[in-house]
Length: 171
Image (cartoon, rainbow, N blue to C red; front, side, top):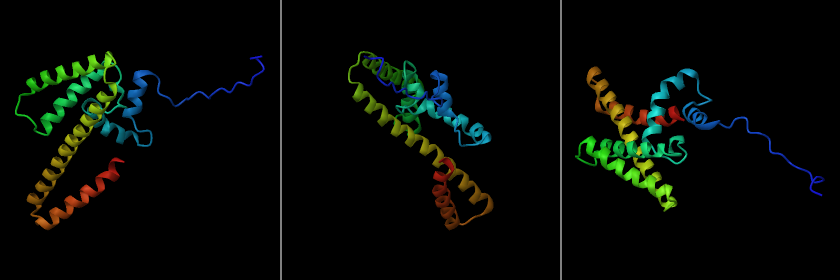
């Protein structure tokens, strides 16, 4: 008899995000951070969603993957200065590549290889973000050194201490 068997039901996961909007909200808002920190970091988090095509990115599920991959390729090439081409040419080439990836994925051809390509692109996009932040930090420290006539030794020490504490700030 099937009715006599003990049925074990899994408890409903109340913390699970509901739908696409819930996934985006869970990705953008840090529950442990305060409201002001979430508000200040929101533009950075949104731009990260559109420029870094990591596999757990909520925008990498479904057809929006095409947009994220296109923007990620253009962002990486432009920031890392890998090409002299104009942005329009880069967008056109990236859109064609992303469309090819989307078609291959819809046909279930080489899905594992495409995931590897997305992860490699994520690494290079992350390197582009590191370049942006390191440029901002160096420019700011150079301005402070010029404005306050700080020596090169103090400048180098400040640069090292700022680079050492960034990891604590972000996480």
